[in-house]
Length: 243
Image (cartoon, rainbow, N blue to C red):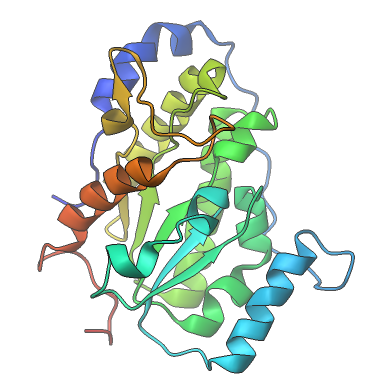
């Protein structure tokens, strides 16, 4: 029951537009090589902050790590929203899935999480990456997860609709459907549809700050409600060795 939380409602809104898109080119081979961290590395200042935090507070295993792009980074109420999780925020703004892969060891391996809450891919679509290639990137992430973190489950939060990127809704829905299909084939991947409850009458709800891209507290309340229902189930997947 946990393999997929299907995105049918949102996909139905845009399936015609999604079908009208040209066929994607073959997926490229996605590198899983780690980034070399230095002053010129991508997102150097944000990653440096993670190094500092880990130096001040020694990483402990079996926490719930939230990682991905700015929608994770700006989840400033994470501890209050999930007080029982012992959550750790490792989001960094503007990142794509390949950046999470590049910093995998810093973001995840050193923390040995019991589960991963993942939100990235929206910036990939915005950069012109096709839905098929975004799904290939996430598949590479999951392969690296299996290699380094074993059966720790991953929760993929669906790409969110927004006013600022409403023109990308069809590509987002196609990406979501591809990753939902992936989740149906894996016991360690759960697709979480946060996109459908963010929409009303075919448009995003008024849950965004001034840039019409990032969410306000009402938006995060939707994410919290959806995710809390899933994480509260005692039969959800768990990593071996973690309670």
